[in-house]
Length: 365
Ligand code: NAD
Image (tube, rainbow, N blue to C red):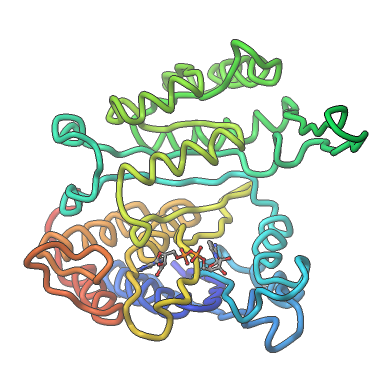
């Protein structure tokens, strides 16, 4: 298969971790017989330096004409003084909007070799944590009508509106059903239906869609209970479907119980198979250019890219397994080092993972 990928290396550690992700993709391509083509485009600080704006039209066009986008990270102190619409982060919001990305997918899997990073009790974490949070990304309170009305003193007020249409709920729920079908066919849908009208509509639409996906078991959980259950019994979650704001909070909670910022991947999806894949961390200016960045989050983002945009599940699993196997040997970047770890830099970590993708032919788990 020919796989066209637009790469936004970005700023800070972005180019370093993207190079490692590309190394893993190339190794998977070599092993499974695919041709990978990359087009590197500018966004964020790098685009501001060259073109004076964070998101040039050419970048959007090339992304739209690719099968998927791999993004490192953007931003840094160099551009902090610019007005909001010219800051690197404006490029991020702009690209998500231009590409119609309304679903944010955040896997939270406790890598066995990194069990020690889990802050939960042994008895809880030993049951395993492996879930995917499917969060609606372009609706709800963050995009609803809002205002601050100043009337002097205690009369002043502010409001934000949580609003969801049937169409918005349906399209994100559909993503969750599709992702569940490739996993255990189980969805826990999060809402606040005991209080909010929008929550009751959310619940109704999610269940009505179940008729189209009869093999999937759907249950509901109130968001306050979900926040507790993630700590008490995280192994019960597989696919977690959430509105925007609840997902913002719960996906960070799920991330905290499964690992360090350097190992967590994410995807933003729109209609069809197209998606943008990026580590959840930022550009880490404090360690940029020092070969200290952990590339695992970017490498796992590349695995998601193969799985969700190209349907290449075995190839994605080969990359995930390669990460597990390198970490099992206690080879670590400094941010996740434990006692006795062999500490390596970003480049060497990337090289070892790529090597394991290509050479380690043990059965894919
Ligand atoms: P950050 O994620 O860049 O860094 C937070 C801390 O985690 C730092 O100490 C950093 O060294 C460490 N860290 C992050 N990723 C790491 C990795 N892969 N390996 C090892 N250590 C890692 O967050 P921040 O410091 O709040 O933000 C820095 C810049 O990144 C800001 O300009 C911010 O706007 C931007 N940012 C961009 C994105 C994005 O591009 N999606 C996301 C978040 C922040």
